[in-house]
Amino acid sequence: MKRASLASFANRLALPDLRLMSEEKLTLSRLRIEVLSGLTVALALVPEAVAFAFVAGVHPLVGLYAAFLVGLITALIGGRPGMISGATGALAVVMVALVAQHGVEYLFATVVLMGIIQIVAGVMRWGKFIRLVPHPVMLGFVNGLAIVIFLAQLTQFRVPGTVVQGDHGTTGGVWLSGGPLLMMLGLVGVTMAIIWIMPKITRVIPAPLAGIGITAAIVIGFGLDVPRVGDLASIEGGLPAFHIPMVEFSWETFQIILPYAVILAAIGLIESLLTLNLVGEMTGKRGGASQECIAQGTANVVTGFFGGMGGCAMIGQSMINVKSGGRTRVSGIVAALFLLLFIVVASPAIEQIPLAALVGVMFMVVIGTFAWNSLTILRRVPLNDAFVIILVTVVTVYSDLAIAVVVGVIVSALNYAWNNASRIHAKSYTTPEGARVYQIQGPLFFGSAEGFNELFDVADDPSTVIVDFADSRVVDQSALQAIEAVAGKYEAAGKQLQLRHLSRDCHKLLTKAGHLMVDSDDDPDYELAVNYSVKTGILGGH
Image (tube, rainbow, N blue to C red):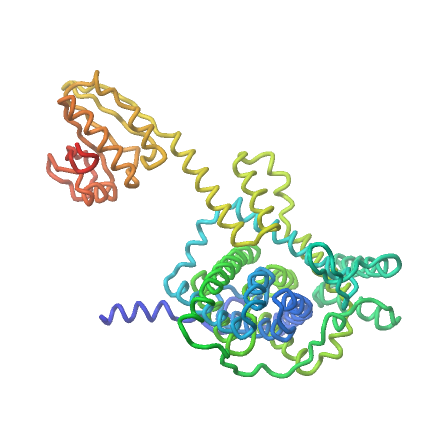
């Protein structure tokens, strides 16, 4: 490998500047905000990690260890300071089938392979393709995630520790009713009110942390009998230990874990990169997409070797962090360290926090995350964009994020192709020498190829016909075939077809395909009108 190639490869793997305060000046005031924001996020991470571990069918500590390790590593080397990562429901719903069929050790191996795939995506700079996600898809993603977060909180309104058998399987418990339900709703309302009022009084303490603290004090002080974190499961544990997945290292094992690893890697990267863009819009700062891919992959590889279920960026916790003032890597690091502290030392205290307080925080996240302006712009944007917003929202809620984004991008791309296909047309005139000139306007590609063929009047045109592409662009193989078909018609009629004003890339495309024969001196800068005649017989048997 040449030295230049080695340097280029090294630059791809280069980690970002790990100075914790690379974008914000480190002051005591800023440090206090970051620490308190991290504490708030850590408190909100506990029930989420436990709940997603239950969804995946693994022990709660498997989810908590993932939240700690993924959160810590991505906070250190991720592409966007201020983002929070951890165990997520989008990944958990994919993991459940693997765990049920093959066991948790196969999950650990899958998470390692998932991380390797994500690292490869980052090294290859594939993160840049997130730019292809249109804004309507982003709006649908945000709205869908807000609804998913809201629906996830409804499980806290069931009686913990009970299982009900129904026609469609088991549920996580019976719904609260009567006095317990009113108590739960009241505490949720109190938490939300505190979060709304607190910024108007003081910003010394993040509003979500104040909401959790005051509501917890009310519950503990008055001895109210309401669901608490400890009712979900005990979060007590030790430090995560290095553990090589106990699976047979064989081709058969690889065939089992590869499909799951690819799906998990795709879902994790899509959710992480969309969250990166969203956090960037809120903070007014850009993030490194490919670097985030590497960070997510590294975090998952490490997590798989330390008994964690893997994870990705969490939009809910990221919103809590940003709105609590977290802007640097410090808040994410502090959140992960606090979470580890909860597991190892402070589990008895954390287990006393009422679930209503955490639900209230997440409800405020839902209100802040949902793009309410999208409800009004639906009537003002093009119908196709409005359809994409609604479609992505619905698919996100009823299926999963990755499918929703892919569907949204495909529909948007098809809409774009259709609109461009209808744009192609031509202006024609006859030169003093008697040649007919067709000035093509609009891109020539698979969608407009048929319309391009209909622009020409072969029977009535003179012996020389010039096709001027100054306002057009030859894009793909279908465009080449369309030009070949038109040239064949004119050759059959004994007439000559010439191409003019091809851009540099169009010229290269046609020359590479063997379609052009230069009839005049080639202009190396393609700034002048250059005429080409088309070689027939290359395609279509002419």
